[in-house]
Amino acid sequence: MWALARFTDETLRARTGAQLGKLASLLITVGFAIALPFAARGSAGDASDIVVIAALRWLTWVAASAIALSAVGARDDSAPARELALARGHSSVAFALAESIAAGRRVLWVVGTPACLLGLLAVGCSRSLALVGVRLLLLLGALAYVVALALLVAVLARVSRDVAPTRPRTALLLLVVLPHLVHGIFPRVPSVPAFSSFLLHHLSGLGAIIQ
Image 1 (tube, helix red, strand yellow):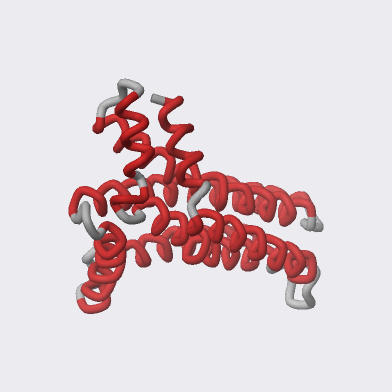
Image 2 (cartoon, rainbow, N blue to C red; image 1 turned 90 degrees about the horizontal axis):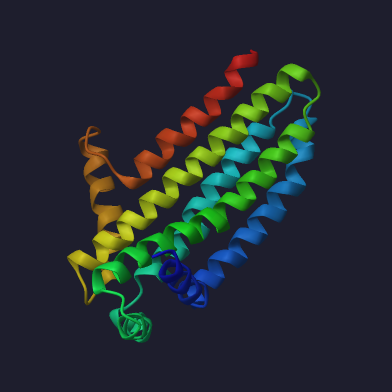
């Protein structure tokens, strides 16, 4: 199974959308890494946590979104890889599961690496031991957020393909947009943007520990 997951990950990584997501991740990381030391030494106090959380938000909606759209793709995009996997003795169910795992792995790498680097930079810019502890909590929280995001992308990619095999990208967009429109009227209805905002909001609350 893991060999098949690596194979599907290599296939996904070669797609244009995934490459654009990786490029976006690099640019976002560089930009926020430049801004973070200035935020850590601002006149109003250390605001590096705000920079890390803002970076996570951008990474979510630019890099992870590009990977998700690339992961669902069109049915013909994965047809050669599926045929090769079936020829090697893997079942269609195993291939579908491997596709989901690949989508999650891509998100873990493309979003998780910048989150780790920016979190460590925030720790390094801390000017007190108490703040170091808070920034370490922020780092752990950011990594937990990335894991949750990777699982969410994997599930959404699978559901989109199952619901609309011929138009999975449209299904993915509808799964994200429609529940959020309903959420605006009925806040108890869950949505992907609301879930992401909820987690990032609680990450930002870690800064209150030292106040």
